[in-house]
Image (cartoon, rainbow, N blue to C red; front, side, top):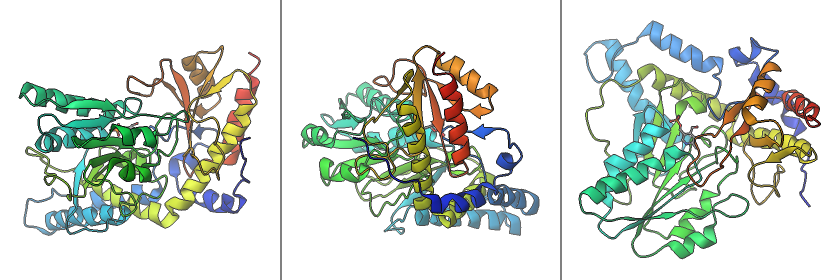
Length: 400
Ligand code: PLP
């Protein structure tokens, strides 16, 4: 029996107040934005911070001797500390924060600028074959680069269990004295599950470097590197309510060589980084623990409503979708298919009803889903009414 937790009604006023802070949402009352896993909407505080910076003291960083330039340089340094604070970094003097364009570029930088210096001939790595391609392709590229240099690295697939969580028991059996690196994901971008990476270190042992793709976790639930003994955290600012083109690589720098992305990086995305600081301030003030309770509860409402509707198939964990599940929680992402309506068609039908969802293959790696699906992804600005509206349209299509 699946437990159904009571809806957290005490959060309704709080979420409604936050929703008012999103100009694009309040300007479009007839539409429901249900695609936050692709990119999140921005609260007024973030937009204002970027505008204030661009209209007040926009300059390049690390160049120039005048006030605007010096202040921009200082802002970027302060932004590094802000990221450390957001991640509850226990050792800020040692860690690194590098700004990149997003998760894809950040994971590539770890793969191509850092990993080859850590791996030796005969080493093994474990990477996820059913997560986002951005968290698979770079690791395979790095192994190919090393192979051309005569360094052979064995790649194992990170195992999953039936609920689409990582299979930590099987993972432990894959670890050998040559295992040096594991790439994992915080929240799955298709199945929506918290991948329970707090269990990763115990399975991996003390010396393995763990790199976390937090693209769907940052801003959605608490993300503490004090609690998660991982070595890299990579996320995209635009999915965490900052402007596009801003991403973060946080590096613990305790295992292996220090992370130092190669090459001349040129002008940083100064306005984007300013917006990221404002976004992290906003998220911390709202409270990522409360945001998580809200989106988990909305997703549970959606899955509870869909469960009885015959033509729909929900992807991912089927047995523990409710908000208080001790097993696995969906952080605001519910992906589905209709038995008779193609996912692209379903996406168009929903768009016609003002319901903005994503329908395609969601950039999943080769062990992922074979056919397209419709992904509904929620954030703190979504409402119970929006979920019920979606459910009403889906119910109307159930006897199609
Ligand atoms: N990793 C995951 C889990 C994602 O969901 C995404 C984007 O959807 C990415 C990586 C890539 O993020 P970006 O396109 O911002 O680089």
